[in-house]
Image (cartoon, rainbow, N blue to C red):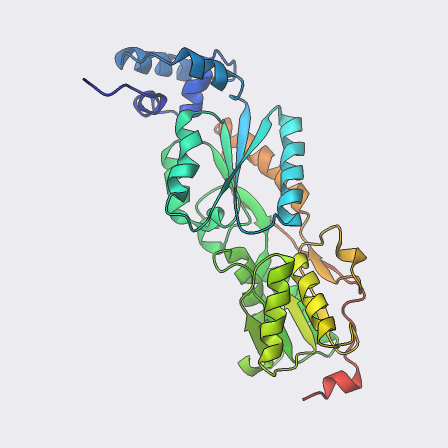
Length: 346
């Protein structure tokens, strides 16, 4: 008995995305006459018989965008703000937003990401980091003909797809230059997730600033970390355990910086007197920390809203390049000029 034909089979024959097939089958007006004719012709050629119940369910979702983001510990403010921006963009452009959480290191991550795309239950996809840094995933989504955008991608994948993100290397360089200008010459750096390339680029930018100031590699100690409070706490402790005494610690984001601040206080360090700690993102709580956190603002919600506009253009076959948002330094009390006793500490 021949295998039953699916929406994906129709999409491949018609040369369109599964979402377009779903829209045609549900009489969605947002389909060109040419594509409608191609889909109906392919369905007829394949003797495709859609499942009526599935069509009824899918018919309520044909104007839905799907945000795919990682399951990696507690949700950070980054993802809350990103989702808020995406929802705002969806409201402006007539979409709904669904989310799909996937374990980044799961061997089934590809299948789980492609499943809703192949079923045609969304009209476009937003890939958040680290999936936006995975060329294999990007190639698979592109092959499905599903319109998509990437968020906060690294240098390699920014050339592969439309999307939006901050210039993370420039952000790291900007933060390091700020601290160097305050007289700091010994640094700690808590890295983000290993597969989150944009966070790694911040360290690249900081390293460039240190080199420009004539500092060698022995002026910096880095520690693997993550993007939440516990990982920042643990990363600071790893730096402290080396015996190296930085006067400034640059953290992967604001939540990990909050963890580092807590760890520093447990070690009896005066903040910001003996130690400066800074972050990235400018999360809403950053100004409420003690001391209020110097950080890099990257307007995550605005990036999310812009991503929807770029995706809406992609659905209309309008191509856009990957857009880079300039970082903005927000100076608060957690960074200050090096004091004599801190600068001379061994």
